[in-house]
Length: 452
Image (cartoon, rainbow, N blue to C red; front, side, top):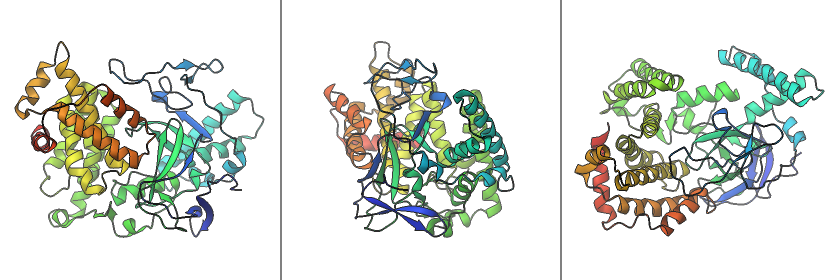
């Protein structure tokens, strides 16, 4: 059944978890374990369907935003829905027998006692099966089509850009065999439509290859909630058993000694509620997110900056400020994550989660430099940043080198980011006159004063 497995791994039964993949030889940290050139199923999400290549997931840049590389997307002559860039790509091998061997969890989807939303999901699966049958004209019973869609839903993986922006979904029957751990030894990434599994730590020969199905920065309670809701299992890894998040206690002494479990639960839920409202009503997003930030700022002397949901809310606030062109505020939040939060959660600078934060700061500083040097420069932004006297070319030079180094190990040398950095250097972007330590002091001050 597993004839197409990469040579570096082999399948083995795992008690209580079905089948897992194990290394056939040792793998150093920061290395490619295996890659799937073309996953079986891949499609951009609704938001990106009109602006992402269906084959390689190249994403058109936002209007008015300058990008180093641009391609023209052409609409499919057949369905008139999906688009393709000029890059050619072959359709992957079918692998349908392996897809049919995956768990469908039909009964779990129908059972609303686990999570009331599961019954709604099953209604969606029924509707999708009807639409798929009508569109394709296949002569299969509804039960067969529903089970196939259920397998795709439960085994799907989020496709993200190198900047960690979700743009679609894919299914790989090989990657679907990777079991979950809240302290995984691998991470899956995407580049040009290919799925790569890379090691986060050294993996001895014969050890299971694991990934995290959810954001490892989530609290134990939130990880368990999401795992149960989509994958129908309770994680019993060391982190969950000991209530740890990225190796840190969910309830550090500074917090548990000053706030009861009930008060903490109420605070977390209120923050999450405001965050969900912000997502549901984009027009009021920044208002709701600011209210959520204020909740945690009141307790910032005891509530860790890295703890969920505060870190997640901060990331959303940063994105909201970017959307509004408020580059000073966006820089403040990005620096907070880069300087204070990510180093606590991920000790290695090349860890992809942390490298993404570094790249985020680089992109914002590039936008700021553009705003301050264009013919009609942004006087408001200049005023907001005047007191810090940041030499942005020097900052960009250092961050470019750091991103190049961290992405090469965390994402691999063929990452799209590597091409971006090469272009920056060719164009002479980031030739500052200051030194990094001097600018780092200024950035730390800006992070402390621009945002809470």
